[in-house]
Length: 226
Ligand code: HEM
Picture 1: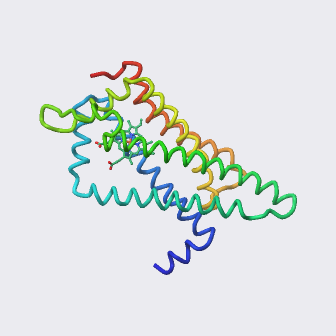
Picture 2 (picture 1 turned 120 degrees about the horizontal axis):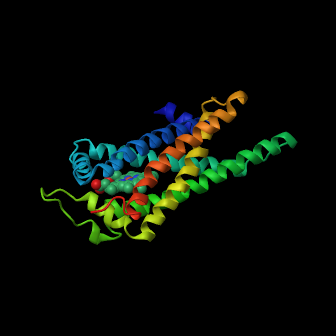
Picture 3 (picture 1 turned 180 degrees about the vertical axis):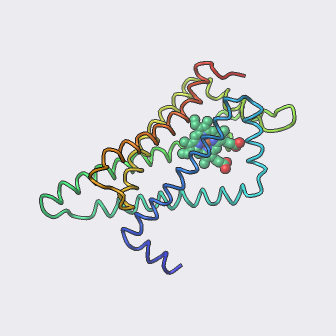
């Protein structure tokens, strides 16, 4: 415990924990996306997956872990951005390097805050049923929550589908830059491979954006319906 507190009191320690928590959140995103993509297999598949997830004995432990990860990630991102702001660059080289790093870190913080706004909206929408509550009341013939119907009815409303599409683009920007910073934190940035690593981050972020965005888009275009 003392070691963790010690680690978190240094800037490099904070960066490491930020990177590890970010990586774990990307893991969640991939699993969540793969689960949601069962919508393309039809109502049985998606509702079966949702029911399995809700009935899982470790659901609340996983939720607690996920919330902790989000809180740690957000708190450290804000704390590091705050100390970056306060630190004063010395000399021409440091001015340039620091300016670049500051622009990237501000950009990541800004897109991260927008993703946080999306997350609050998303949980109010699909988990708590506060937004469009009429869509979250349906049950299947065997008494399960009809998640398929809730998602399809929601994204048939163009403004809702559009808001998710915009949010996925912002998420993609956050991931592309966040993943880039992660490589730097782990010391895996080498001049020779800079281009390749940047490309890899963009491809990984794009796959998550395309996978997620395909759902509202397919419903909006009528490719998935009730
Ligand atoms: C178009 C893309 C997405 C779709 C269709 C989608 C769909 C859903 C649905 C249907 C639920 C509720 C599940 C249920 O209660 O049965 C849910 C919950 C959730 N989603 Fe998403 N989601 C998407 C993107 C995202 C993204 C990008 C994030 C994170 C940034 C995210 C984070 C969450 C979280 C944290 C929950 C709550 C999980 C829980 O209740 O334990 N989702 N999502």
